[in-house]
Image (spheres, rainbow, N blue to C red):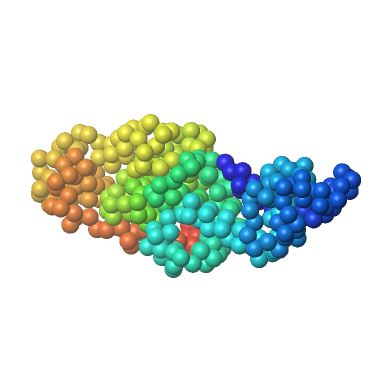
Length: 393
């Protein structure tokens, strides 16, 4: 919500012609049929106090004196200040606007975090920061950042924490990328269901499997990209709705190959069964507190049972330390062995160090859909290669 000060400043920065305080003063004394001296007496001010304010020559203006003049001219407080600032010099007006922009930047961005990401170079150079943000998102001005579609569902509190600023920024970057990719294929829910039934074997192809699945999903109207997680956030994945189509981001929150497959299936469950609910909010984050969806456990359970049904999990547990046996059954069940280890470690966290060596890592598998936004000048530059990769037949 805009403050009264913001509204006042917006009025000041408009280019419409307004009368000056001098013009209104001269008109007022004619209207009252009095002399200037009588006007000074009515104001309880001398000529040396009144004239510099009327002519914008005062180096410093006493607020009470300015408001008294406004009262004499039959103006309310807001109009008095607006007229005084409107007749001020262009440089002073620019100075006010710079202050307004600086306030907006401090309120909405975690500058230290953005520097750490490599998005900005210097947290003190506000003009450069403004230029970077405006160019990156393709905005008309810095204030449009808060007018984007996500503002209504992001964080409307007057005081935003560092983590919320970073999360909001991450969301806006993600949404902008999906808008720019603009998947041309209609969302086909039945085709998505068919694709889901055939995903498991692709987990065994460490280099190309994940991308192959993402490409097939793209042609079914579901866009999937990968992006590094941001500091101060715990987002493992996210489902957006852009142009009535599900769009999914998978992150490297835990930097595990098995986790990206689990996260993908989790988000696809939301795309299948909660799309209408997500549409009302524009997005859903997995791994962060969510006030809207209460079915995270259901989505997790779906993803887990999809890759490793309960009876198979119970069967393999007694031999979990025998890698040869785990490999044998993983092949028989058409899944990558690291998924078996992942599910076991979810239940027994102390075993992560022991079984981490069986996870192949994820860098190669996501390379063709890896959005690395902070080394690019604009969102369009980020998604160009990804879009080309996804659209190749």
